[in-house]
Image (cartoon, helix red, strand yellow):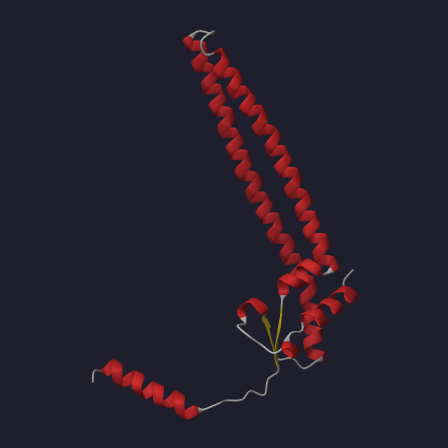
Length: 170
């Protein structure tokens, strides 16, 4: 047997011989996405983010429509104006198109940063409530539901924490 096979054989024997281990810590889990989407403060934040996103999209759609109209206008003039004038308009249009792309990327980056900051603000506000709940109810470890494969219903504290957050943060 080579050394790797010996290592795995010994490791397997150790794991089998240990049997069940029991923890004295109280472990629970919550669905943090559900809490953010359904808490009063979370709903308010999500509405603010949605409003800004809608305004940004409307602004970009208007500018995109203007650019499409200009492109159509330039294509219609192609056979009417001189080749030099056409090239000048195409260069000008490409510059406007590049400016639009840059503005769109900047808007996207600013929006993502705003969204990230808002979510961090939410966590700063709800963390003390969660910590207080954990102290009161002697919960040692609190995990996010998306990291749990399966758990008892009694270990899911989502609704209890949602109630606490709604009561304490307005």
